[in-house]
Image (cartoon, rainbow, N blue to C red; front, side, top):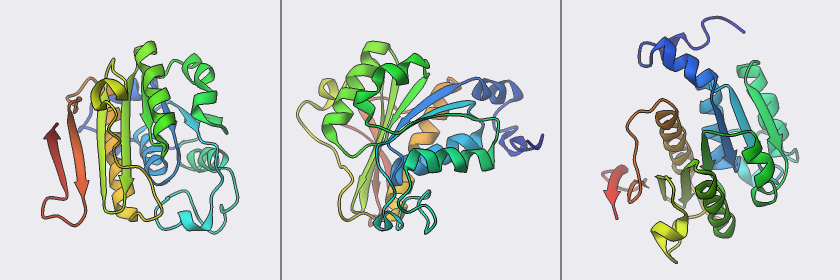
Length: 224
């Protein structure tokens, strides 16, 4: 690995903070439009270990938004594509690829003691189960979602989705979604994860980041 691979991170973050990232472990559930870009940015940031969990394979309809989807990766498992992609960027990044549903692999995910978990899935039941598991484990949960031209990102600490949303459901992936929207949500999620790892200010429920592509204020922070 080239010694200057992370040099442009500094002095925005210090050498000690860069070293802290290299010792950190993050888990990502979902490697689609939101999770794929979050995964790549965390690899590029220098996070040392990433647990990547997804049960799906790439489909041609993913190509409008999912950064890991190309003509060459259609039909391949998302986790294995992510593993290969990460090694091309930072060979020293340890990738634990879990090709299965997150809720069936909680024991395996948390056995690696992630400092932060990113929820980038598109199923509310799975999201709720993951949030409960994070609450029990005392691990911060960064969630991001997108649908159509809108999305959101937030951080739950010692709380589940039911604790903060009740029965309300936030935007989830659907048949129609713009690539810039899902990727913006993923970028925000990776940024919040880095802030948590480095003990920097970040959004906390009940304050969230909202995305509205067709607005004069495409990204804003609201307390709800």
